[in-house]
Amino acid sequence: MSLSRRIAWRYLRRPSDRLVSAVGLVSIFGLVIGVMALVISMALMTGYRDDLQKKLLGGNAEVFVYAVGGPISDTKAALGLVRSTAGVAEAWPVLYQHAVVTTEKSSIGTEVMLKGVEPSRAKTAPMLAKVLGGHVGKYLAARLGVVPGSSLSVTVPNDRGNGSFLPRSGSFVVTNVYATGFYEYDARWLFVDLSDAERLLAAPGTANLLEVKLAPGANLDDVIAGIGRRTDHHYAVSDWRDINQQLFSMLRLQQIALFIIIGLIVFVSTFNIVSTLIMTVHEKRKEIGILTSMGAEKKLVRRIFLWYGTMVGFAGTATGIVVGAAICWVITRYQLVSFGPEIAEVYFVSSIPFITRARDLLVIAGFSLLVSFLATIVPSARAARLNPVEALRHE
Image: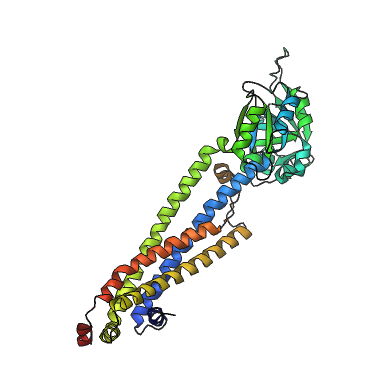
């Protein structure tokens, strides 16, 4: 350990003045609060964004292929072309349709989005395993007044061009009430087997969308371009980023703004470090004078107080990160941030995990240590300029 670091450590560990000691503890505590707030806020935004993305992809897919203005004319041929595209792991036909659900307790009807999906997809998608096979989301079940064993009627418009204007209806039995944590699925979607959707819509072998799952390591943009070439650009191709671009762009902007706003807390807390250093310089005038009179260079004195401020910054930063990460773990482990249906409708999810990423922690630590170091420059330069004769005479 260098001489300057050893002296700085002694000043920090054993302050001779109680006021300086108290101010030093306050400076560390203020930095701890600021860093802890940054860790928790970044974990909140990261967890919300990642959880929302996972749930969006859990019930859908990365890429969507559809015909503009109507259903896919030849579903089997289109599936063959898409599945043979490099980077595609699997593709499935899907039937979408707005529908109205009625029950004995809710005869007025509730509008839902009916989605017909192949039952085999439940083997590879845990979220679809929850919702397929006569299952109803908990919020939708509460609105309809149904429980497992209840029956419900699903009515869809008749827009198949068969000359009939009467809507088509079908009856289903609720086998279970699920909760995915994604409000859209739990309150507004009704998932049924694709064969049941085809019968209800009188559209055997028809799909109005193909959902595509990418192979591990496949590039999303390359797969989209490949599907376009394979299908000779007869179909429109989009991905989950296009559909949710505004939402995730807003979340990224909010995270940056939150970092800047809460980062000001860390910046303000460094003024306590400045105060601590100024008081320490005043307290140690005699020792500084003795060091310089013995031949110590100004840069040694400057390094002592640079090390002192850096140690204060490191202590506050490390403690803040550890405490913040521990709080995030407790919140996530016991789902302490959960919402009722009214708030879940706004935020799309019923609970939020607080996810701490190593990259975020490194950015927070780097920012905190940087502003802490910058706060030491002026006081350490002032200490280096102290006249040893004046310091000793004053004592």
